[in-house]
Image (cartoon, rainbow, N blue to C red; front, side, top):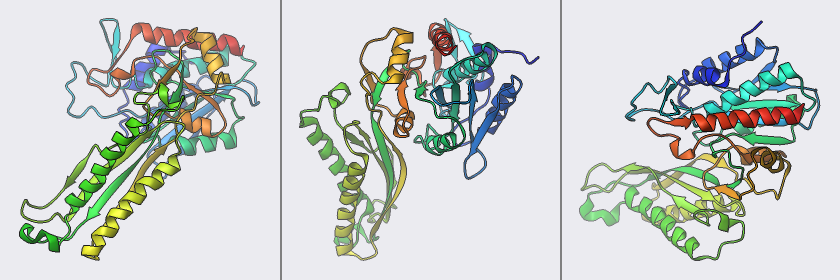
Amino acid sequence: MAIRLSPLEIMTELVAFPTVSRETNLPLVDWVEEYMSGHGIVTQRYWDISGKKAALFAHVGPERAGGVLLSGHTDVVPVDGQNWTSDPWVVTERDNKYFGRGTCDMKGFVALAIWALVEAKYIGISRPLQIALSFDEEVGCTGAPPMIEKILNVLPKADIAIVGEPSMMKVVTGHKGGQGFWVDVWGVEVHSSIAYRGVSAIMEAAKIINWANEINEENATFLPTDAASLFDPPYTSLHVGLIEGGTASNITARHCRFDIGWRMVPSDCLEAWRSRVLKKIREVEENMKRTHPDAKIDVEERFAVPGLRPENMGAAEELSRGITGDNGIHVVSYGTEAGQFQERGYSAVVCGPGDIAQAHQADEFISVAQFNAGRGYMKSLLQRLE
């Protein structure tokens, strides 16, 4: 008979796989698949186009719709340049904390979900339990939508999706959405003493960036809607985090590349904001071409993540509040895959162990107490599915 591992033993196995988003996650997926297969659980995969990554999902219980799906991502952020005091790929316990990359975000929850699925297989449940493990969440939640499509095509549809991002086991019912572009501004080089004859890619990029600042200032003055007022800040905000360009200090820049993104309150329209940003970019491009026809701006869409809309005591909220006893109102300004499940007809919440403040940090950790709280959640969930 296959050995049934504890949640901590499973997390230890998962953290040992350095599934940074730029690398493959297949060794981890292989391990999970083999472990579940040893307990009689059939898993299925969705492969990305490169064949170097895969999502994994499975179903336990009666072959019918109406179950609960536990959602987590397999990828983690890099440890490059971070000053760790222990090996990031080894779970290390000290000071009542489990240290290691992904312990908090979010291999701790994934380990608990795998444990729960195996337990469900042995105890028998009358309502289905599913698991969905995605890839490329950390680079814009790009792996979940095709995975969800595949799940809907091959498994009975669950009613509820519990996305286990770290929330300190609070029931998060809303989060901001977001979208991001890479913007490549192409100018025309001339000596800076006659800059008016050329087009500086940096100076033109600055017009778009300054516009983003002006929009943020404008949005901050508006009276927020009831839904938006729950968030910090209570409005959609634009941000530029990376920029590079130029050749020399006395030459108009031929090229400038920057990213622009926005975090959007759920009551706003993603497509409307996309159109607004593109309109500004094309306006700047048009003015550039008046100086020189070779000047242009290229835009590459990086990601688009829908927000999670509060459901007013939806099925996922009711279930998680019943288990945790949490009746507070909680929303977050970061994005998750919960909005993507909600878009496809699932009732969704975010509820998982750990503090988001520890995510992506050197010496990332999840407290022992939070990990145990997550296990308690899974035990209660299994009782409700019996």
